[in-house]
Amino acid sequence: MTELMLDKKPYLAALDSDGSVFPNMPLKYEAMRDSLIENFGWQQIAPTVEEVVRFFNLQSRWRGSHRLLALLQIVDALRAHPDVQRERVTIPRLEALRQYVAEGRPLSHAGLEVALAERNDPELRRVLEWSKDLSERLARLPPVRPVPEVLTALSRLATEAVWVVVSQAPEEQLRREWSSAGLAGFVDRIQGAEFGPKDGQIRHAIAEWGITPDKTLVIGDSVGDLEAARVVGAAFYPILPDREAESWRLLLTEVWPAFREGRYRGAMEEEMAQQLLAALPETPPWAEQSAGNPSSR
Image (cartoon, rainbow, N blue to C red; front, top):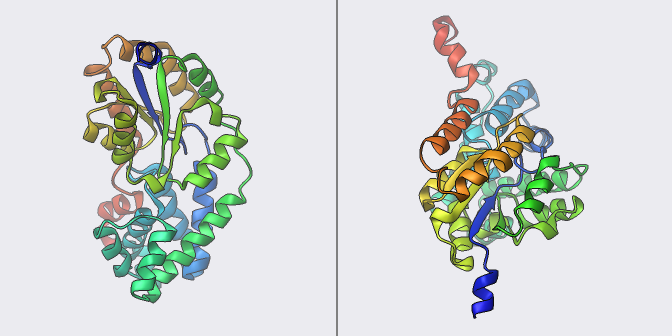
C-alpha cells in the first residue's frame, strides 16, 4: 500500500484529441460537409452548407461538439440562412433527433439503432445512415501527424500526471489515430463518446485515479472543453486554433509549472480562457451581414 501511494501521480491531465493533439479538424470538416450534402440532397445550396458547417465545426463556440448535436445546430442555421430561404430549399427540423437528445439517450450508432427498433422513424433512420456514412469517410482519411510538441509534453510530464484522452469522437476512431501516430502508449486511458459527455468523462477519470478536481487540468481547443472543466471544478488550458504548437510550448514552459505550484488558477487561467472565447465567436458571419444590411432581410 505504501509503495502504491509513493508511485501515485499527483495530477490528472484530461486531454482533448481532435484539434488539440491532431490538427485534423479541417479534414474532418470537409468529410462532414460532403456527407451532409450527399445524404440530405443539399447540392443546390452546397456553398451555403460549406459556410455553415465550416463555422460550426471550425470557427465557432460550438467547435468540437458531438456530430449529432452539431447536426441540430447546422439544420437550424440553414433554415434561418438568407441564401437558403432565397433558394426555397426545405431543411428538416429533425424533431425525432431533438427528442432523442432531450431524453438523454446515448449519442452513438448503437443508441440510435435501439431507438429505431422501438419506433421506426424515417427521419431518425436518415440521421443514422448519415452518421454511419460520415464514420466511413473519417476512417478513410489519411493519417494526420500530431502537433510535434505534444510528444515532448507527454514525455516530460509522464511521471507527474495521469493522462486521459477525453473526446466526443468514437473510441474506435481515437484508438486508431493514437496508435497510428505512436502516441497510445503515452496516455493512461482513451475515452470516446461512448463514455458520455466530457464533464462525465472527466469525473470518471477523477474518481478512477483518486485525484481531486483542483489537481486536474483540462486541455482542449473548444468552449465545450472549457465548460466541462468548469462544471467539475478543474482548471482549463486552451490549445488555440491555428496556434497549436505555440500553445503546447506555453503549456510546458509557463502554464504547467504555474499549475503545479498553485499559481495558475485565477487571473492566468481566466486570461487563457478569454483568448479562446475571443478566437471562437458566437454569432455567424451571415447573421452579422444580415443585421448590418436591412435590405437583405
